[in-house]
Image 1 (cartoon, rainbow, N blue to C red):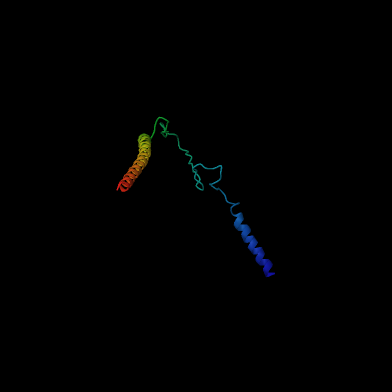
Image 2 (image 1 turned 90 degrees about the vertical axis):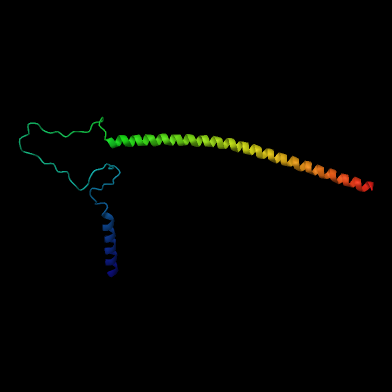
Length: 142
């Protein structure tokens, strides 16, 4: 009896905890509702019963031509940053081309240096052979 009651209470509490999300009202994060609306605060409008004023003041609506001053400054700053980025990229491209030229010269000079080093070593070997031959001839003459 105790075991059945415990299992029943446990399953009921799990059911209540899981069903809380299903009964949630006004969920702001539904996939179809990403706009900036305020939830839980109803908008109250007041109706006036008084006689209308002779010259009603209408609120000034923002038009497309009117932009806040900060907006123009931000756009100018973004354009200046874009121009600076283009300049830096051009400078990087110039340095990369100079680097590739210097690298090509370096590899050519390195290959030429290696070839000259081989030639020097072969000539030094020939000189040593000639010196040995001269020494052998001098020994044979005596």
